[in-house]
Length: 269
Ligand SMILES: NC(=O)c1ccc[n+]([C@@H]2O[C@H](COP(=O)([O-])OP(=O)(O)OC[C@H]3O[C@@H](n4cnc5c(N)ncnc54)[C@H](OP(=O)(O)O)[C@@H]3O)[C@@H](O)[C@H]2O)c1
Image 1: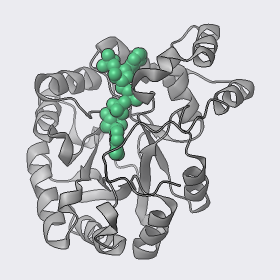
Image 2: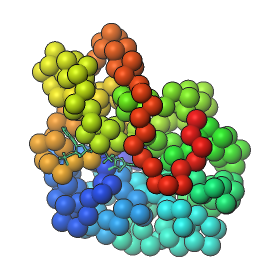
Image 3: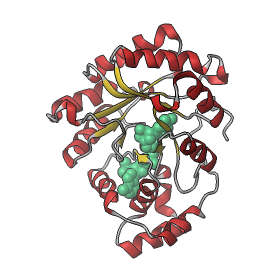
Image 4: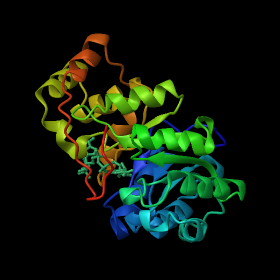
């Protein structure tokens, strides 16, 4: 799959370990997912690698993302850590490598680790590079370091309750693609009256409505699930089209509710 952009729908693997991640990836690949999102800190790259190898899906048909953990951002650690990730994933090259979080308290300069990541790409360890949890200020520094065209995506938290408009507007103005993580607000979308009402109208679930809302704005989405039926339903969200009025009704659900909090998050926009 030698596309220069990310497949719109991917499979998240945060929190999934051991047999649970193997089953999720195996089911996902069987159902037709071809984009898998993992990270060094998830502690599941080896299991993701095993499930991909066992699936028999051709390497070229897969789009695999991993993320460099904060402890590996220094020049001397970034490339060796990515080689270790490749070993665990049983791959010669990942499709996309993200900087998982900006260096805590900006201890290391953005330019240093973005240039190290660009070097990893030049060496063929990763086909594309990108960023995650980058604020506008961090995106400005990343653009200055490697150019906006080198940044395949900024993976940030986006769901109906945290719509992240400032980051989205800035990224769009610079031509940087966005990936919505926690697109189901970790399952909370299933409890929202507006989403449930729109879902009932279409004969789908609130999760599918939330995914369609992100997809319709041009974001990639990477929902995770431990259940085969939910994995299948999430894939089907690509067939759902929401009306302009429904998109507007969901836009009104923004309440700035941020769920990801690792304790060293940057100053959010
Ligand atoms: N870059 C970052 O810093 C960052 C941070 C967080 C997450 N991420 C990425 O984003 C991915 C997604 O985020 P997430 O896994 O935290 O949350 P999420 O995808 O928003 O929500 C997952 C939760 O929703 C449930 N669910 C999934 N599909 C459903 C459906 N169709 N109907 C009802 N419930 C459903 C799952 O339960 P079941 O298992 O029961 O289906 C699970 O509890 C992660 O796996 C990870 O790859 C990245």
